[in-house]
Image (tube, rainbow, N blue to C red):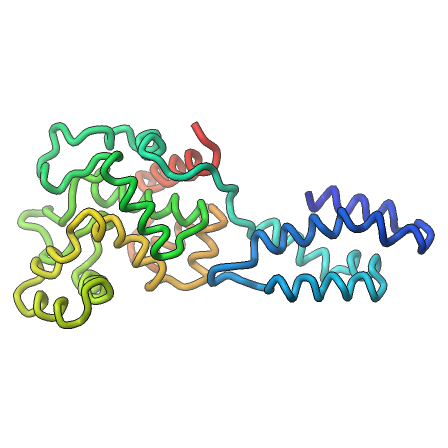
Length: 274
């Protein structure tokens, strides 16, 4: 889209002045669409819609072609292209999750059946968490699916069991540590209930956030409250660097090939289909 727009602008650059304005409207519409789609809304907003139309008015009023062909303007457009979020596909379904991780089709053989959830059981609480915590980009959603699938061994576990007896208080589908589960429980139930559980034991805190809604919602909560805007932008772009930065700089773990395999499958299925 951007390459086509620039080609049109270069062709029109030598046209007589009276022919410049009307042919640029479809080109400008493309630019406005790109900027609006990828930079309006959520915490990564760069310009408001009013700002966009103000800029458009200025372009039409003051040397349109020179401004559009300026180095700064072109660099900005190219920057948008490189940082643009992945294209969105249809809403997340159980079939999509199973395509990423076929083992989620069943809990047969699960070591702890009470902790296990199938893709059918997982899809609603996951999509609910995306809505609640405003996880709207395909790249971010793919990352959260990937970390939950890896940490819980395809949704089989809800707490850390290994090495036995496991780490007290660590759990939910993204295997959060106790301090984060306490923060999460506080955000869901309030400080009084969370602190009462904390006074009892680490596992009492974990129990508060071990229901399906809470357990599958923890990854979205963590991303929206504990990670920086830069980390979220990297995930939204769907790049290997963004994924690795999320793991190392926000989650505090190491990127390994096994994690990458799940993440790559999630990116592919959520953005490209089956």
